[in-house]
Image (cartoon, rainbow, N blue to C red; front, side):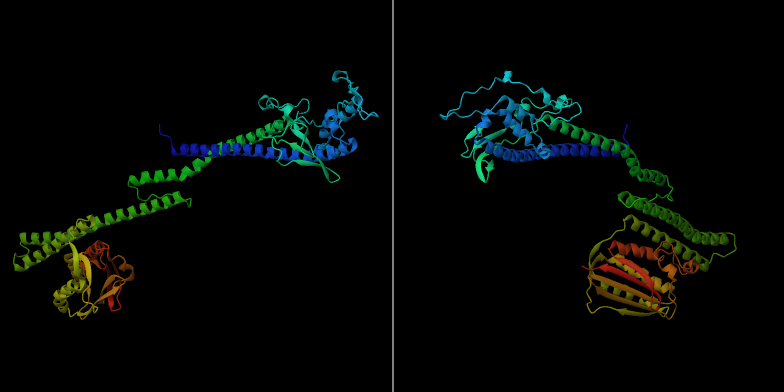
Length: 526
């Protein structure tokens, strides 16, 4: 079963939204992890600066770096106390008092040697259990990266093996002023930047801290896990909202398409009055407007076709009725079969034959089947020949003929000579038929911008303004009874229009300054 466009749009919207949401989630997760790692390294550098100050103060009290090797608890107590949060609270590590209880600095003997150490073994050292915090008190932050009791990261986010043994105190190294290692892991590259330990402006040592390449402390991983869960929740909510909005949005987009589908079915059924509502200004709206224009055109063509059939029937019926009446009158003996009766019958037959020929030529022109043999010809020669041949017929009605040709007597166009002759003869016949006696006809030729213009301007009677735009319609006549009496069927100007358009030209009509009709023909030059 074919999937409708509505559900195709729904799937496209959902896939696009899902891709964007997942991509943003992954990018935000990567950006947050990277940024948080940089933040953690920055905090550790600040911790290192504070630790440098604490070491300098302890060096002042001890007088040497020996305490670093001998008093490990003090070293770790200084690290714990120099944490930024602990330093701000004035926190004092319990490891310092534990170290004081378990170790007393040895005094030098008079001979300059240290007495043997009486430091008890690690297992024999007393443990001060009085420093335990009350149940409601907050334990101090741990410097080994472990979270407070009861708050462990989920199994999938536990620190990697050895992470708790790779805390701040495991990555820090102390060097003497000559960069000889005193305590901590060895550093291969001694030229890299180190943090100096300054005492009264004098460098007494250097501290080196290996930067972390990934987050490994449990409390940091727990925080990241919480943030990732928050981001995942936001992404899920975004996907759910997209799911709820995608189907109504797809339905809204498809709605005008469904309207177009219904209207198209009505149009194919022959109901040309159908129209579709234009509700948008986008491509679908443009399609709806074009559809309405198409429906209007088909409706006009259908009306024109029906009118065309009715007009043809009327035009054929009139001469046939006259022929039938006269023949029946002759048969019944009402009229005699003399020469005059035969001439009347012949006139109606000629009129009918002319109408049929005009209809045939017009139909051929509409189908594009009219035979055109185009060649390069001189327009002035063709026009002047037609005018000279028709001049005698114009003089029968005492119509004055005026010709205005350009000084350039050779105007070359690519056209069919015989079709141009037919065009000019039709226009001359119109002037003879409809112009009053003692009238005037001006024919003028001009050249403008690679175009040649031929003007036919005759005298009264004129054409009403409302009828000028209909003169090129088939079988249209301003006064049907008078025109039929003059022998016109209303097809001459329609044939002229088809001939001009076949030569890539234009023809139009307007009121003439002489009181009659002004026909303008525009043809392209070579």
